[in-house]
Amino acid sequence: MLGSATPHPSGVPPYDGWVDHYLLAGPADEPCLRLGRTVTRGTLLDLVAEQQKRLSSAGLESGGTVALRLPPSLTYIAVLLAAWRSGAQVSLLDHRLTQAEVDRALDRLAPQVVVTADRTGGAALRGYSEVEALCARRPEGRPARSGHCLIQLSSGSTGPSKVIARTPQDLVRELVRYDRLLDYPARGARVVLLASVVHVLGLVGGLLQCLHAGVRLDFPERLTGVGILDAVAVDAMPTTVLGVPFHAELLAAQSDTRRFPQLTRMIVAGELTRPGLPAAFTARYGVPLGSMFGMTELGMLATDLTGRHHPSVEPADGIRVRVQDGELLIAAAASPYLGSADPTRWADGWLHTRDAATVDPQSGLLTLLGRLDSQISIGGLKVDLTEVERTVAALPGVSEAVVVHDDGIDAYLALEGTTVDIVQASLVRELAPYKRPRRLHVLPGLPRTTTGKTLRDPAALRRAAAEHPAS
Image (cartoon, rainbow, N blue to C red; front, side):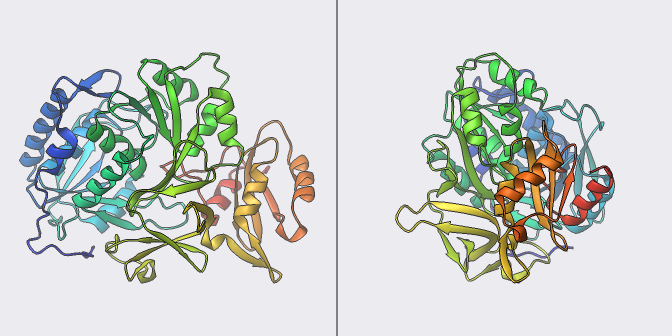
């Protein structure tokens, strides 16, 4: 069971109509979404009102709690906005989680109502689904104990998930930061969304910001290279593609000969971009590959939407950063964590990111160097695993790579048009002996989290390698 980091005196979050004011306002006939068909604001508002009635019938009241486990869909969007509009605290669960994972999450979150889809399964690479919502009351659930409207679980790419909470004010402040980005899509443009709407990039940078800014949000029918490009080609409106580096890799490798004059840029976030990918993407499509840095805890924090500063990013308006002992710290008024959390993650108004970084004193540009725990010692010599990983990933024929320390330096990689012996020989030229991976595990593809991040948990990577003993 979770405690509250910041109790609210009444136990009911102070919503004050933020959903109507910031997300649903606008001309009723304005197209705002496209999931196979175009949806106007008026239609969306009707769907939200309908879902509010269904949630109310399930017993959800203002100050109540609800968990959503729905695939990307018009139903998901309508239920999410309806729950917030009803004054509820919403926990988001990725629809791809196993039932065992869901059960553990529900035990931690204790929602009063759980909303699921009327059916599961379907094509794994679908960009959206058409489902109906099923609302189930949980007698053991409890009402909100804080003013947070959104509860999310961290991606878990490096270990167990953390429970992260945000208030309406947090979300509105993030929307204002997006408004102040000169090169982010504005009214009259559209976004093709590849990132998960359960996690912060797709949820706030995609769904909420597009509704707020009057930008049409399009979901591709399929999350394949061809499917994404089909979604770009469907309209002549200026188009931005929003996803993670994996999606940019996928598009950069496409042999599609069509031209896409409507494509203005792609923006990626979630993890560091492989060296050479921005240039490869721009060479293929003639537009920049921009990048953003953010965290589930605080949302979007820094950007380089034009690609001019790569690999550095510029802190967003109102974001204060500093580096202490090599670690990036972000100013935060309160801890974003609920329940049991490492007390050293937030202290004295600063969130400790566990990311290694530098800040240029003249320009203020921020350069992420990887996880702080990527700095290890081999025989008394310091090794930066991020450096090793970038070196491996930059080798010809290496399509993706992750390097971890697991009783030694291990590299997990996928190859295309090369062999492990050639990679080994190249590493002899590129890296000092103490920096070289002890073992190379070749996999058909690297395991990823539900958000598309490369999995970095050594135990999970070992299991993946065990399934392919030939590696």
